Image 1 (cartoon, rainbow, N blue to C red):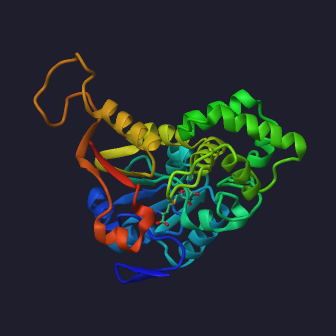
Image 2 (image 1 turned 60 degrees about the vertical axis):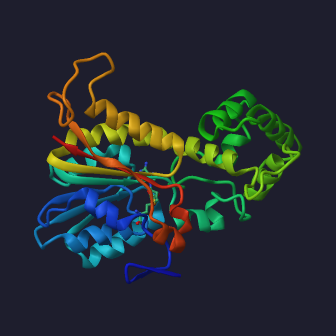
Length: 313
Ligand SMILES: C[S@@+](CC[C@H](N)C(=O)[O-])C[C@H]1O[C@@H](n2cnc3c(N)ncnc32)[C@H](O)[C@@H]1O
C-alpha cells in the first residue's frame, strides 16, 4: 500500500494526478468525463475540484471498476457512472443528457488490479487462466483465440502490437504447443514464448512484448483509442480540454498523430504563424509530459506514461 498526495490507495495509483488536473484546467461548475475510471484515483481528484454544480461522467468496461465506481456514485451525487467502452464516448455523453463537456481524460491501458489479479490472465508472472479481457463478459478469451487463430495471424499480431522481432518463430511455437495440448494458462504461454529465446535481455522477460501484443489485440485497444479521440474533438466545448495518458509507443504515436491532425495544417499546407490555426479544432497545450522522479519513486508503473493535453478552440 502506497501513499500519494496524502491519500492511501491500495489498488491503483493514479498517474501524474497534479499534471492531469492542471491539464484539464478544471472549472468548478464544469462537466467532465473520466473515460477510464479504473479505481477512481483521477475521478476523485477531479471531484475534489468541482463545486456542487460540477458533474463528472465516468466510464469503464471492466466489471470490477464498475463495482468501485457504483459504490462511489452511491455517496457522490456529482458522479454519474456508465459501464461500457470509451469508443462509445459520444453516446455516453448524450445518454447523460449532455451535448458538450469541458474536459475529457483518457488514462488508457490496464489498471494495476487487472495486472495484479492472476485470474484476469494479463500477467505472465502469475499463473492464471489465459483471459486478458478488460470486459470478461464480452468477446473471446486470449486462450480461445490462440487455440484457433492461424499461425500467420498470430505472427502479425505479435509484430504489429508488440513490435516482437521473433514474431514468426513464436507463432510457430504456439501452434506446435497447442497441437500437443490446448493453451489454457498464462504461465504455459509464457514458457512457450521463453523457449523461443536463447539469450535473455537483462531485466526483461521474453514474454513481455508478446503479452502486450495479445492484450492490445484482444481488447482492440488502439481502435478504441482512435475512435474515442475523434469523438472527443466533437464533444468538447470551446476551451474544453482533452488529457490523454498513454503507456507505450504505439498508443503515444496514435495520440500524437491524431492531436497533430486536428491542430496543425498538413505539411505543404498554408504557412501560418504559431498559435491557434483557423479551421483547426484543437490547440496543443504544452509538450508531452512524463512522471517526475518523485512520483516514480513511489509509483514505478508510471515509468512509461506520457501525458498529452489539447484544448478545443
Ligand atoms: C490505467 S487504468 C485507469 C486508472 C484510473 N485513472 C485510476 O486512477 O484509477 C485504465 C482503465 O481503463 C479501462 N479501459 C481501458 N480501455 C477501455 C475502453 N476501451 N473502454 C472503457 N474502459 C477502458 C480499463 O478497464 C481500466 O480500468
